[in-house]
Structure formats: structure tokens, C-alpha cells
Figure 1 (cartoon, rainbow, N blue to C red):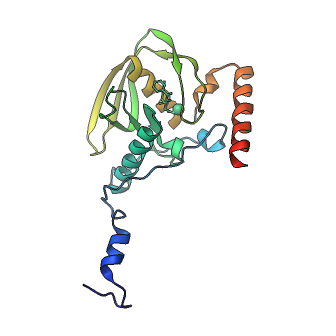
Figure 2 (figure 1 turned 60 degrees about the vertical axis):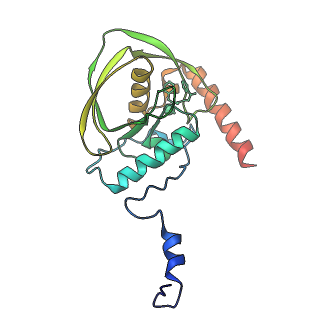
Length: 195
Ligand code: K1U
Ligand code: ZN
């Protein structure tokens, strides 16, 4: 058994630090910001390098999304203001998609109203007009560029998550009356939770 200079047991220290290395595969649940938190309106910055820090963020976001039973999550929602999105619309919830620095490169002319929810506005669902299909260019968690041709729920989810990166929450598409009612309801729920 090795000892540190201060005489502590280095195996214990190693175990304590296990999972905190730069390429650790230990994942963590991240707190999700709730509307009307003003941090949800910050505009996310481009990711300069897809490095170990970003991969760790991606892993934590994927775990947080699955834990919350969501189909998507934007870094903005976990108070990280960088252009990172995770999505999984598969039935098995076993195919996470990672979009770093996503850019819409094509949108269909057709639009439809789709029912949306948001992990930052729990319990609220309403219709939002979205493009039926979109093409998005983005980097994956390895820094490789890819183009995604999305339709149906994936297309809706990509548009919803890209809005988050621009500081926009889906309730901002609703009428001021609905939005104010939602704001009041959320603040009341947050006050009660804090008690
Ligand atoms: O961004 C988020 O908060 C995640 C959000 C993504 C989303 C759902 C539905 C339409 C557009 C975008 C959710 O996952 S909300 C979770 C939810 O209630 C839901 C899950 C599957 C389908 C529909 C809603
Ligand atoms: Zn959302």
C-alpha cells in the first residue's frame, strides 16, 4: 500500500478522485434551470474545441436527459452557455445524438403545429409552429462534422433545442396571456418547493 508525503493512504485518495479525471466515464445529474429563470435567455457561445471538458458535459447532459425522461436537452438548460445539444427520440432511449455548434442549413417550406413540452417548464404542453423538416450541420462528441436530415419529432426537437441555445423558451411563442399564466404557475410551484 502506497503512502503520500503527508502519510495518507494514497489508495484512498485515488478512489476519492476516481471519476474526476479529464476523460472520466463517471456521469453526473445536472440541475435543470426552470422558467422564468433569466439564465434561460442567455445566448450560447460557439464551442472552440471538442475536448474532454465538452465530452464530460455531453455525458452529464445525456444522463440528465434520460433521468428526466426527456427527448432532448440544451446546455443552456443546465446553465452552461455553449452550443451543445443532446437528443434521443428513439423508442429504446439508447441512441443519443450529440449536436455541437449546430447550424440550420435547410428548412422545408411546410410547417405544422406540434405539441411541445420542456424540461424547464415542467407540466406545460402547448402547440408551436415548426418546420416539418430541417437539415442541420453539427459536430459530434468526437469533433467530426455531420449533416442530419430530420423529420417528424426529431425535426421538432432540434428546432426546440436550437431555440434554447438562442435563449428562447417555447412558451415565448404563446400569447402573452398564456405566458403570464405559465410564469405565475411556475413561480408559485417554485415558492412551494422552496418551503
Ligand atoms: O428541451 C427540453 O426541455 C426537452 C424537451 C424536448 C421536446 C419535447 C417535445 C417537443 C419538443 C421538444 C422534452 O423532452 S419535454 C419531455 C416531454 O414531455 C416529452 C417527451 C417526448 C415527447 C413529447 C414530450
Ligand atoms: Zn425545452
